[in-house]
Length: 373
Image (cartoon, rainbow, N blue to C red; front, side, top):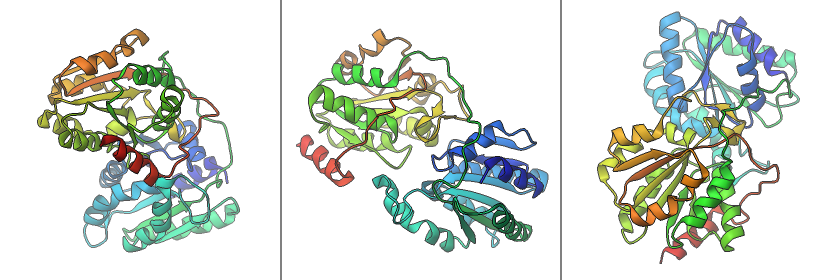
């Protein structure tokens, strides 16, 4: 199926707004939205619930339904606005949901997607959202019939979901861009690892940051026992790090975050600042993109995390634009009193042979907790 054709069909349905958070299963769809030449307004929101809120406002302002796209893990973020606002028992706001199905039963995937994949369709049923599942064998005629049914449901003020299996969309012209930064993320992470006190505790966000830290830690130290890799739960790494810091004041706790993840639950910054953990250090790796799921730019590329951290109440915050400055982070962690945040702008690139953790999530948890003793 061509994403461009689907977008044309959405426009014919009267949809004028498309909003969401990128997903690797939907990469071709996301590329298509970025390069689409029609009249769709496109927004990459900080999280999926925000996309639903924007879609509701779009309908209120225009009378036309909107489309919200997401990875199935994002269903959790839309439950509240969907159930307490959009549902027919409340305001009755029509929404078309396009959901990438990670962790589909019987299809090998990363551990954070397994349970979510099992309950995806059941969650939609619980939310009273009818849905259709599409895959690489879905014909244009079948898709037209699905959208026709969706149109009827939307006209009643209800929601409809299209659940997309891996490999559904054809590769078309990719969306390609650069952010202008020169530092390479994996080189930055290696420098941070080498500089940090060995007894420091690291909590890393989901995606390529955790994968690169895993490989670099093994290359440098032969293990990753001091790293908790938050392979799911995008946006929650900093709060996990805070929980550790508050319970282990004897440890320096370093959260290595991504810009997309930090944006997803930005309220963590003022909360962390209010707790004033003196052993908490926050590094935001900023490539202005959701690189791990296809490199679509975030919708907030202008965000200056260091300035926001200072305004939130962090003791110190700075933007580090050079490798030399990055190499000083380890010494600063040893010397400075937290909470401190460093924002590090990096380019959009990663190794094609970048691996994944060999251990299970449970094994990584047990290894990490064993290293804390």
